[in-house]
Image 1 (cartoon, rainbow, N blue to C red):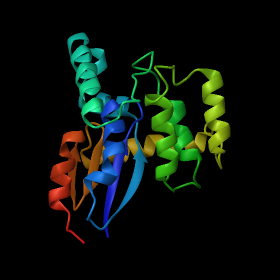
Image 2: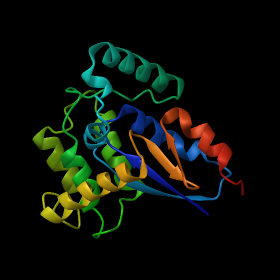
Image 3: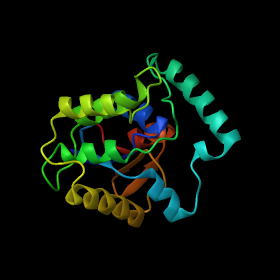
Image 4: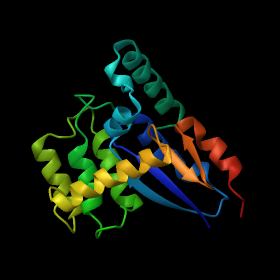
Length: 194
């Protein structure tokens, strides 16, 4: 099986779309996916970039394109949260806290986080009651607010930057990086078939 690392931040609509499309995109390929949370803002800072939502014309275009893509992909329940951008740290830390130290979150955990953000009719992902309910439902093994978990997220982000990751989603496979939702067909073509 070919190992694939999926670098993600729940703040990215493209990471959500890629997450939902990944199983279908890789049908027929022998692979195993490791979901690795990173702080998108940390990637942007390291590379001296602004996020798409920080540049008004680009923000407008991005969310118009995301709405169109969601419809084309059949993800009719996708809604951009208000506010956006939002601080994703609580959700990224929660993803790591749901597994023992050094282990990455599984697909079920990432799915719960992504859908908490992108399938909630525009609700604030950090609204305290919603966040508490999500945390209770996921029942993390570790304290998401612990220094251990915070350090783990920083280390994952730093390691991604060191490997050349500059945005999310980024897939890492076969010694190469594949950036963005639109890179899924390229990744598929590079992977050996069953």
